[in-house]
Length: 246
Image (cartoon, rainbow, N blue to C red; front, side, top):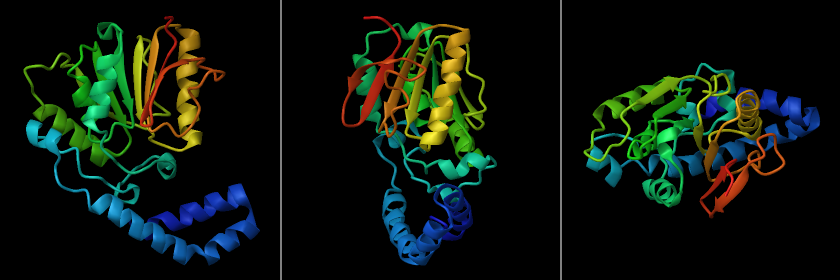
């Protein structure tokens, strides 16, 4: 359930820093109406969708139930830049990866903002060398670890699957060839910081990189950014980038 009180003071401080005092006073004046509207909208978005979907039922895991950001205990000061937990639609992930022509065996898969681990489980059906989830909510991380333990299929091609509880802006980027996944996990500021960390790692250790960005809200992976990636596929739901030649 969204908790209104926890969202107020941090957002007032942020508004003062970014908008100044007059605009913040105005926003506070209309705040009760705005908070009520957002609260009712979030009740509908997060509380209604609580039943397990077919993926969970089939595999005996729990990745369906949405969780509002304010219902999560997160140590990182970057919590205010994040979004709540939403499961990635299984068909979007599976269809996109099935269409790619690449050698997964050489790639380390990383989901930044991995939540309950659904994407990690789906990725394990492909022959990645290793699969890592980075999630800064200890509650979601604990659920992910239990889901990883429970998930066993005869078609699983990668069993080296790990969830790490950490702020992904502080996570050291592996020097392996990478396949990066994001489901719009945070604000522009934090997503840009992640892109900058990946770019710095690539400058030190040039290597193959793929980025699978679901509901891409920001252009941090477009051509002209420090990563200089090429968009090879784009739909209404996701975009895929790479630095590999045709």
